[in-house]
Length: 261
Image (cartoon, rainbow, N blue to C red; front, side):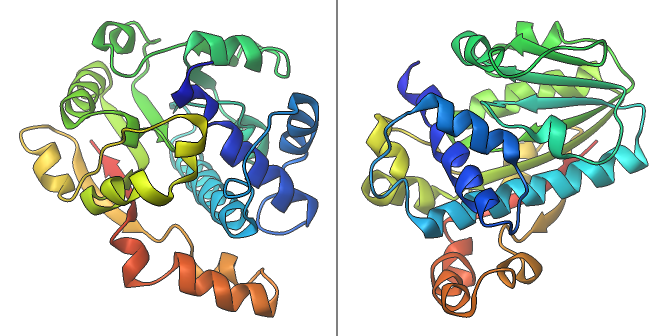
């Protein structure tokens, strides 16, 4: 795998470790895959605080996907940059068509652990290639999961992705996490992704500016670490985690946005 693809092991480890504690995220599949992969992470990537953060982020995406599937049961789910994530197993709502998408070498590894069905498919995919977006299966509505992917795409690539997806589907529902410009610059010094060789990421300060001229609009911003999930931590860990991953300082680095057409 290249450097960007190797970053998938960081959230995989975080979800596996938190799942073992039986809090925030129940993900037995992550535990099994992590134990079989034997990928070596540095001490920073294995920080328990980062594990909590990765698990909460995943839980926010899971809960949102469940809500969207309840509202739009006929929609196609498009999970871009799926890595080895088991969201397709974690969501509670039934789905009509689910596409887990990532680069070909990631999908090749993924197929060792997941099996396709008539409703679930894994496809090699590059979100920066509009021809590949255009070739996605047709549907009236699409639920797009962009977890941990936007920071590897330039503003131009994101706009092209949004433009192509809005023209392909009548109704578009997107949840995406983004670095701010400050967060992207700061990641050069403290981000665990540096330890697997990633040196360049991108940030967004004004989502409305990015979406200007498109039919997709910013609907809502969420907290990535809501109180209901932070409260699942032990008292001591809860206090330290709040200092690191909640409040105004964290929002200056990292955001979670819901978009809609």
